[in-house]
Amino acid sequence: MEYDVVVIGGGSGGLVVASAAAQLHAKVALVEKDRLGGDCLWFGCVPSKSLLHAGRAAYEVRNGSRFGIYTDPPRIEFAEATRHVQQVIANIQPHDSPERFRSLGVEVIFGEGKFSGRDTFAVNGRQLTARTFVVATGSRPALPPIPGLQAAGFLTNEQVFSLQECPQSLAVIGAGPIGCELGQALHRLGSQVTIISSRDRIMPKEEPEAADVVERQFVAEGIRIIHNARAESVEVAGNKKIVWVGGQKVVVDEILMSSGRVPNVHSLNLEAAGVEFYKTGIKVNQKLQTTNKQIYACGDVIGGYQFTHVAGYEAAVVVANALFLPVSKADYRVIPWATFTEPELARVGLTEEQARDRYGDKVCIVKQDFANVDRAQAEAATDGFAKYVLDPKGQILGAHLVGSSAGELIHEVILAMKNKLPITALSGYVHIYPTLSEINGKAALAFKKQGYAANKTLQNLLRGFFNFRRGKF
Ligand SMILES: Cc1cc2nc3c(=O)[nH]c(=O)nc-3n(C[C@H](O)[C@H](O)[C@H](O)COP(=O)(O)OP(=O)(O)OC[C@H]3O[C@@H](n4cnc5c(N)ncnc54)[C@H](O)[C@@H]3O)c2cc1C
Ligand SMILES: NC(=O)c1ccc[n+]([C@@H]2O[C@H](COP(=O)([O-])OP(=O)(O)OC[C@H]3O[C@@H](n4cnc5c(N)ncnc54)[C@H](O)[C@@H]3O)[C@@H](O)[C@H]2O)c1
Image (cartoon, rainbow, N blue to C red; front, side, top):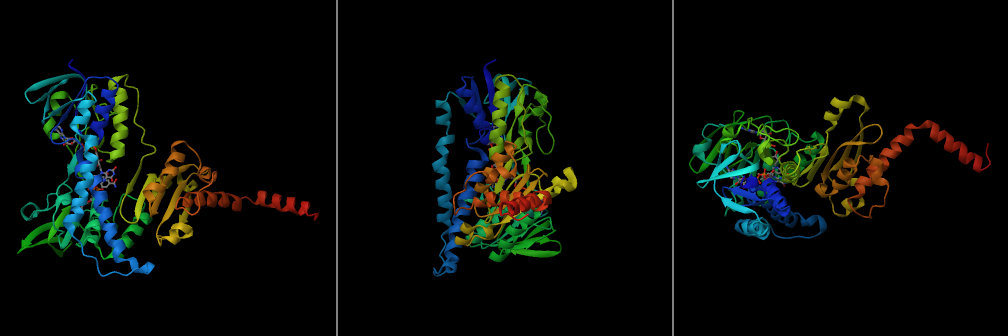
């Protein structure tokens, strides 16, 4: 065997496998068909958060009057906003550069290859043999077969970050995290945005009342949302595009497709290697082995949680199993994520409905509004709440934070949940005043108070004790 491991796909998952394996002194080849960095760097997390930040700046300038700061309507040079986005990519890219990986000892091979057998991958006329392979080829936008869409033309996350002009009006097809993040960013940067949601709310995978808070903000900003409808067909009329949705037409300059993802499996000739896959991704066991035990897969290509941090986590499991003994199992009990709209929405664990389905009426809910947090008042960021889904002893089954910096604030909940600490642990230390993090401590206190309010015996005992101390029997 030429290599200990051949990694196919140089994105969030593949790069972690390649660098870790090389640093452990394994012989590693990394095959990438395009550029190292993957979706996250070029078309995903990094550019979307950078564009959202530009949008937030525009929003803050427009809405400064709440703090007594008045300006004329801001002039937005969209090309400069996307230049900021491209600059951020350029700043981060060296970390994912071929030079860096070669310096770690990885053999980086550019080319689109395919399996030619159970233990051979063919690329650029070479046959790479390895003890183990890792498929980390990611995913791409799903394009539902909407009549007229291809002919009219559309944007996906692969084009939107290099636009030089902001479309005056935009139909966003799909109200998941991509549609919501990009819809809000582009609306704030000057586009009239209509989001088409196939369900009765945006972000249908989230805790409904948390998604409602984001939706209210979208509506307040002037984003139009069409519910319970799918884009059915598209027509072109002059220089406009018409999207037909539930019998009504949405006339726009541009369309953004954000209707889910499909795994990149088809060009790999997985059949030759005995690797089975479904429509949603490659079939893996808990050790992330495919149906060919020498071939592992991680990241978006296996479906499941499609996040950079999950691809990285799965990559770590794969490194341990592929290089040493295959005994590590991926554990998805505590997987957090955040959608970086304003307000942000962060989640870990079960929704209330999922918890009730599993544990019935024993589930206990604690909720704290940001309006009760002094720092949120100071920053006029009072929309939103933190909701904790608990078992009767206070063990955290899930948490949903919607509000300012929710994606940061959830981390102490993640730590507690991962270590099986009850929510009361979050009030077992001093939070700095005034910070938004106080929301977690306040929730823990609220849970303690609920327990105290229900404990009549303890209350009677205390009443008696203090009566006794005051000499009143
Ligand atoms: C707009 C957007 C915003 C997002 N924001 C976030 C976020 O804020 N936080 C978050 O956690 N996640 C976010 N994600 C998701 C995140 O980008 C993905 O989950 C992550 O990139 C998956 O990593 P991966 O390694 O599986 O795939 P990728 O990082 O996409 O890497 C796959 C690599 O494989 C290569 N490849 C494909 N086919 C082949 C082949 N046949 N041969 C060789 N190479 C091949 C590709 O060129 C690519 O470089 C976002 C995604 C999008 C689209
Ligand atoms: N902040 C983050 O971490 C972040 C941000 C963006 C994306 N992501 C990742 O990328 C993945 C993909 O995001 P996404 O938003 O494309 O997918 P998604 O699957 O979450 O949402 C797509 C939505 O589009 C709807 N849809 C499909 N066809 C439609 C049609 N014809 N008309 C109207 N609606 C239609 C679907 O019903 C679905 O609700 C996410 O699941 C997430 O894992 C993460």
